[in-house]
Length: 253
Image (cartoon, rainbow, N blue to C red; front, side, top):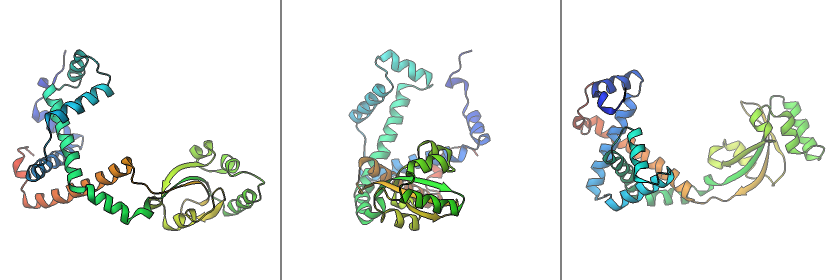
């Protein structure tokens, strides 16, 4: 039996979404899209056919759809038409362009005002349950009786980090508790820090590298997405209270 979208009725799909507790999420996404369309229309933000074609070509390259037949087979497997695909591309491009239109300058301003929070470090750490052991290890590392990496490999209670000799990764100042951030960002490179008492236990830390704050493309996109999502939720709540969007959606409940 060949299954296709034609075998699925709208009511069945609605019932499944409710049973899987996904109806609210999907409805919210639909309302977000309606809000994006409304505001983009008011602000004159549009997407051109050339932009849609460029994104479609990028996706074809990413998915290795080299021939037209490959693309058609992929669309059939996804149970959608070329028009469906292009409409989805347009929706995502419109959301991105509207986000840039509304918040590009706000992202730069926010970053400049909070630059200190975006400083990063390459951090190694050891977590221990016992305070006495933590202090003993600190002095042994400080006196070069054992390296930080050896101590982490032997004593860290976190198995993943133990296998990586204490390597925790690249961490941002704003993601740390204030007391830990203060200790980390004032410490000399390569020197043990601690023990620092937390709810999880006692930490020994070591900074391998300080990384100055930069508004990289990844950081810009992260902040832009956050601001845009907050704006969407706020605007949606306002419109829901006035029933100005939900009245446009004919979905039985």
